[in-house]
Length: 420
Image (cartoon, rainbow, N blue to C red; front, side):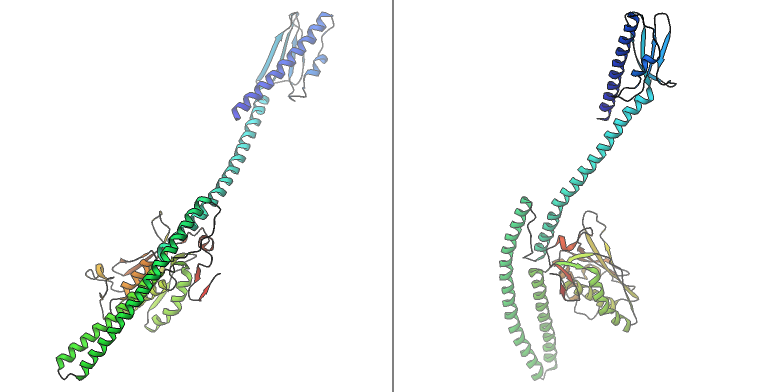
């Protein structure tokens, strides 16, 4: 468009100059025919044209070589149009080449400005359209993640985009079907818990009776060992039942890491001080993760308790984004200056009943189960000094969790309050 516009301007100026040349030629030829003398003043009325507005230099050379002229002198390069009259006089109309170039440049500049404005408007419309489509998709993805994590009845609002609303409706029907299945599984788990606790309680009472009444030391020792095994089995059943309910029931929501850190700091800093240890928490900023309220706090408590029991020096809790640019995630690390985890214990440290001390060996296993139920993972990132890492899905920082997630999903940990 810019090139075409510049060519049109050049053609328009050339046509205007051609018309002036023809008009001057007719006037000169008329004067010669009527033997009226030529002069410079007769040429003044063609110097400036109202249509083009460009002053020209007009030069007329008659048959005897006399030159008549009008208009501004041109010292630079010129663009001219000439014509010979029937009587032999020569008429030439010229303008400065720079004036013609500037006329074309004005058109080019206007086209460029118009193109930039059009591109800006198109970009704004494209961004608005992309956000209009992307926001419902992110909302839908968050709702699907909640269903996958166990929250079977996420709140879904219509987006106004027919195709996205169809997918949301199908997710809603899927969540209804999952709700019925999970309700049946919960009832089954409750029945199993009741059926197991009753015989285990009776068995415990019978073993206690044998331990008290038997006079044989070996029999009493075996009864004591059996009681310990039964009590451990009762705890395992309770823990598995609680974990299964959390994994199946699903309460994954958006949690601010800063609130979780504040709760853990209030709970554990005095304990570390009494043990003459230091506990520090890094600045999480505005990081928000998708996790079950209370579950993440329980996992952190387990890691801090292990650090207090088996670690040494300063225990540090810090948060950072994942290094994988393809996924939006947050890593919470718990590290201390202790001797760490031995090479023999490290591969199976999250297995149940595996411990390096006098513990039950259930804490880390349950912690990993809780994190896995929320769609994350718990790993031993470094053996010596020990660093445990909790990988969780993050709410994108450029998006407001109250907009991306269903209303009421943002939980403030430790304050027992929920936004409605």
